[in-house]
Image 1: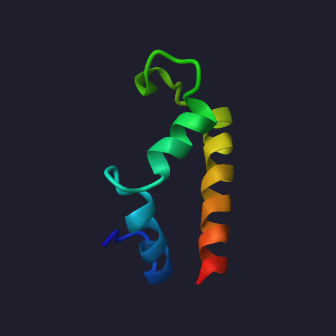
Image 2 (image 1 turned 90 degrees about the vertical axis):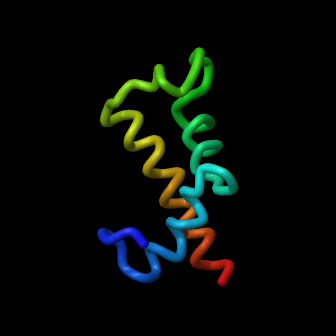
Image 3 (image 1 turned 180 degrees about the vertical axis):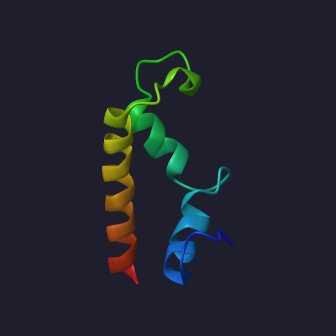
Length: 67
């Protein structure tokens, strides 16, 4: 379990951020990693953070309403 999240956050985050089966890496690439040689070239900027945050927020919203 992730210590910084509550029970609901953990139920969402653990499968979403699972690098083998989760959706996070695909969302990361689609949101901020397109047209780059690899994901290592993504710049650590507030603009990229905001783009990715909106995707994660939408995934969380969708997850909450599927229950």
